[in-house]
Image 1 (cartoon, rainbow, N blue to C red):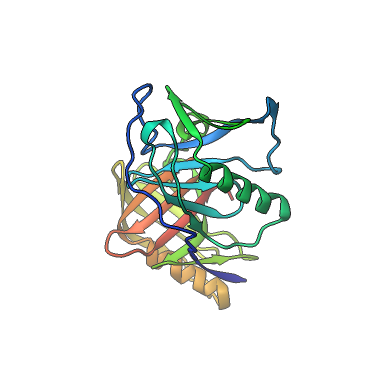
Image 2: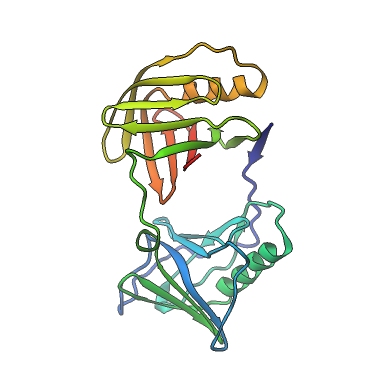
Length: 257
């Protein structure tokens, strides 16, 4: 089974553009943070099961936030130690009531002009009786190594459309030294690879020739088509993103099978 997903953005209002540095502790811009503690009126606020709040302060004066359901975000200003976000938008994925309510709670909190304070790698955001304490994502969840990790294909990207495959044997890649080995979910492959801190260059791959049909064939062909030549890559904890240097196509992968 395969599933196509299209990013949908619905803006509620226009935001401001300026990000200023807090004299007390620098700026969070360019850093991602994960929640380590949330309190309301001095008591711990429980989050929805198996979720954690993530804030990504983009270099383009934008904030994206995620609590386990939708990916949301908006333009911000951090001037004067206050987060000013006059509107937000994001994906419109249906979630269970607990995660949906958590999305709405966090959006209201961030829209209510909370204050922020950065001390070393800990960011504290406060409004009224609510305090959100977050820490640099790379401290809480350090990136897994590119080499030696088995990465499983989570989806294929063509322009702005993500194609996910379910109920199929996993497609995987593992890089060891100058070699890449893996599976398309239907056939095995191996070949040469070199990499820098930001790019992979994949040589010609040797692939077994088992016949693939249906969605298995689409996954097989898609993986091989996107695992060619020079690719930009980035790792975010347990996720690996590969993108073609010539267009927006690529693979999204997650550590483990």
